[in-house]
Image (cartoon, rainbow, N blue to C red; front, side):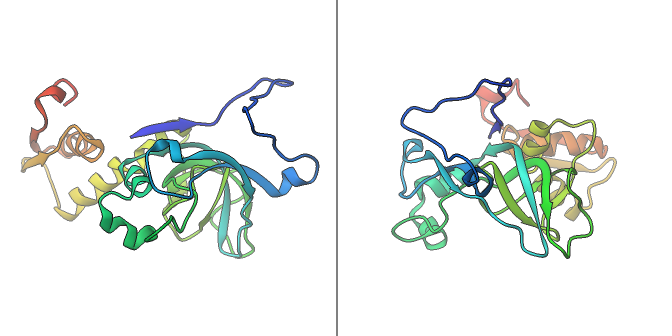
Length: 217
């Protein structure tokens, strides 16, 4: 899994994209940049494009993205491999043009019914797609939480995948001190988090991974 941070520029400087010109004036308030794709294939099918900025409904939070990730699910949806993936993402072409599940950023706006978040809050969470953009809308009751003060945006976005899944599994197993656990695939996103969390819970951990990744585990 790779973490992607926002591009930072100094005042008066900018990032110029070859063959790309953004909107001007009032259009900027209604648009955003996003990485989109309209057909399945390798990473090259994706491109940076100016798209309409989402508007939060009454129970949604509009988040300005500071960091996101590219995980195994994003890659599978982009390439539509295995083929069965198309039954969920679109048989001939993608139903949703913007990928990205994990996000961390700052609340830009909230719907009228939102009570747990306010403008300016730093948050992180998971959404089915849409995080590979400057803004994304997330329901208040979805997987969205306030970011810990001691955690960077990059760390918060990355922890949503492996660590969250591993923690859920270990809680379901009711893992405790002195218990023994075997973690298969211990060098992956879920596995590495699982090893660390299991040790934190005081369990006796046996980890299995590819030989080339032994140092990582």
